[in-house]
Length: 236
Image 1 (tube, rainbow, N blue to C red):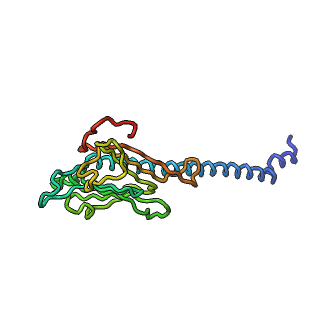
Image 2: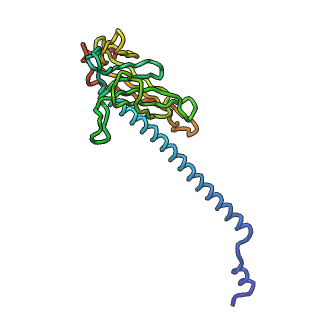
Image 3: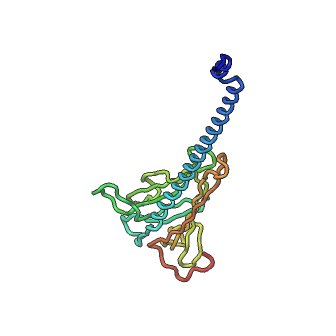
């Protein structure tokens, strides 16, 4: 037969010490869990920001490659009632360039447009502030005597730190930082190729509170540019 004192002991609840220990273990587990979740969320945000920078660079480089590869010039530079085609690039750090291209894509069937277009690339201060810039692209689907006017302006990349283009001269096999088809050095003549460098501000993978500069470089052959007069040597 069980004694009354043993029954009271078996039915007794947790002691105060046991409750305190249980609460301490619960708080410790909760803290570790929330810390792990917070770290996972920070890692996710960092990866998303990094992927956004890479995607922005890929889109911008792809657009620039297409525009430059289809750059063209007309041979009639002084004909009456004709439009003007140019290929001008200034080494302004960041660079600025405008040119005629055959890269226009019609979005609407029957639109009174052709593949001819005027393209301008330049940078301005990023509206987000800081030292970053925004790369802008202007496209005018109708070529006229005012290659820097009219058209639609759209941002191509944000968080830009540097944008530079240099050009391969087919006659000298030298890379030039500037090009001007209205000048005496390269009169109405396209470069053979262009090397584009785009530097964006990206999150630092080792420290989410810091950023780093990340560059993408690509070389574009201009389809309508003159062929090289000799093999490209070490000066490339």
